[in-house]
Length: 304
Image 1 (tube, rainbow, N blue to C red):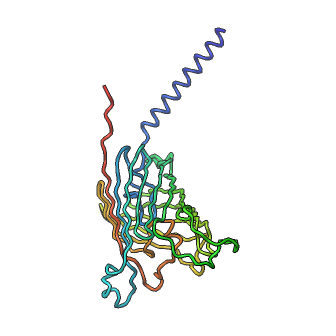
Image 2 (cartoon, rainbow, N blue to C red; image 1 turned 135 degrees about the vertical axis):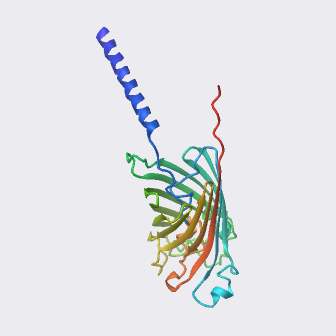
């Protein structure tokens, strides 16, 4: 019994020692900050989340109408005279490295609700070479459905078509993998899976895509952002061009402002990756901007 007790004591002592060493290593670990300046790259969500527990974020995404390299650029005032799309979003961090987001966009009168969690964080010492964030959200199209004729059927060709509430819903899930290679260059890649409960005849409910994005810092507060998203499955017929976005970003502590050139007017990804792409190969693009503001809340002080 004494031998067993001695072994148990030694095992507990060793466990406490290892735990203490691990805790010290964890406390000493320094994480890479600012892979991207905000929670969005341009259209795509970035690997970042609202950075502090109980803090808030507010974002505006605005896209004007499409214009091309002709006299319409001046006549339509670079698209500002044309119908535009806009999205407002509110973010909240209930826990560290986790955020909830509620948004509403004009096109389709879409409400979206999502959760984003950062599971891995790149370390300065290199023990963890990348950051990893998971995202999932659900979108509700609240606009009126188009009129249905008496010759419209479900996909089986037998049942007369009738709208249901679930036809308003679509889903988006992503795994975002990112790395800051240097203080002036960051990149991320994100496989995207979108599922829509209602699609046109011949369309695919499931859309799979991959978003690649980079951030190149060109000044103390200024960066160039580029992203491209080729669709791998569920591509629209005759649509073989990936969606593109380019932005110049000015970022300060708590504020991010971007001037955007995008190949589409949509900003909710359930619509962005399932809508036709503007003919940017012929010079047609959408001018727009993103504005983001983070409201930091001081952490609660421990009770004495």
